[in-house]
Image (cartoon, rainbow, N blue to C red; front, side, top):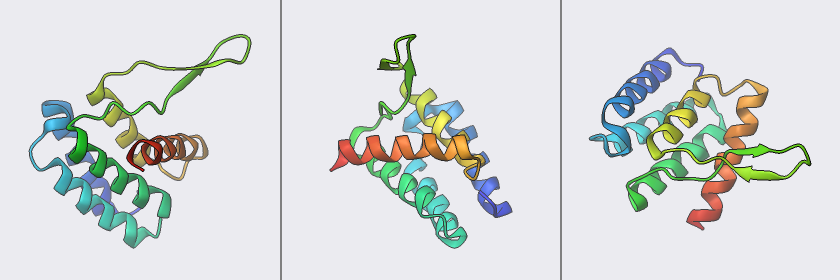
Length: 119
C-alpha cells in the first residue's frame, strides 16, 4: 500500500489478527476501511481481494482459503495446509508490498480462490 495512513491501518489489522485471530473484534470493519484506501490508491486487485476477504470472513468466521500451492519434482502442484489465522496474516503481509511482482501473483491466487468459493 502506498498511502501512509493505509500502511498504518494495515499494521493495526496485522497486530489485531496476531493477537485475536480471524475472530478479532471489528476485523471486517477494519478491512472495509482498508479497502477505502485501496480505492483511493486505484489498485483494483487489492480492492477486490479486500472485499472478497471480508465477505469470506463474514460467511465463514475463518480464513481457510486454499490459495497457496507447492510443487514437487515432477511439476505436480498440491495445496499447502495452513492454519486460518496464519493464512490471513500471510495475505495481509502480501498487501504491505502489493506492487512487488511475486506478491501480486500470490494476491491474484487468493483472488481466484476466493471468487471460486464465494461465487
